[in-house]
Length: 163
Image 1: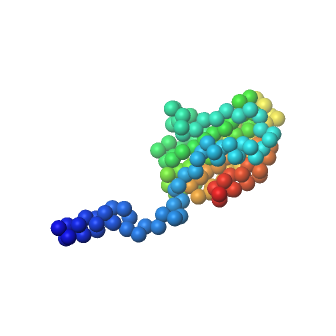
Image 2: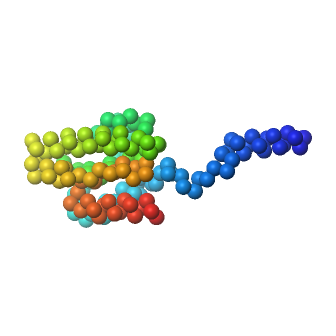
Image 3: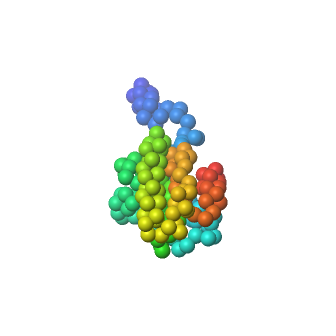
């Protein structure tokens, strides 16, 4: 009986990771809703913003507006965009694997290039703002910021991750 218990204990240790240190789990995703609220609050000049996220019923379909990357790579995301069609956008994509960040960043760069082209045609006053978009990678996150006070929003993002 003791032998069986020892074997079961050993199997359980192997199954649970036997000493794996999860204290620095880079793939622990923060609350996208809370993060979005902090980032939006960092820029008082933002217009009314619409919100979509991985919590929406049709999240994969909505994600294609932002990126053509495979939605299977995504752990969670949010996108806030100007309800009135201005250039303002804030998006954070948390990936399941941080090795995919470069691929998703390139896809978001294509999204921004498309927005720049659209604004050149339909609302040139917004073109420069879209051209000056911040797209960055931090851990497993890819971040897009287009706003009047981009650095405030970027700081809110990094501060939120550090808390």
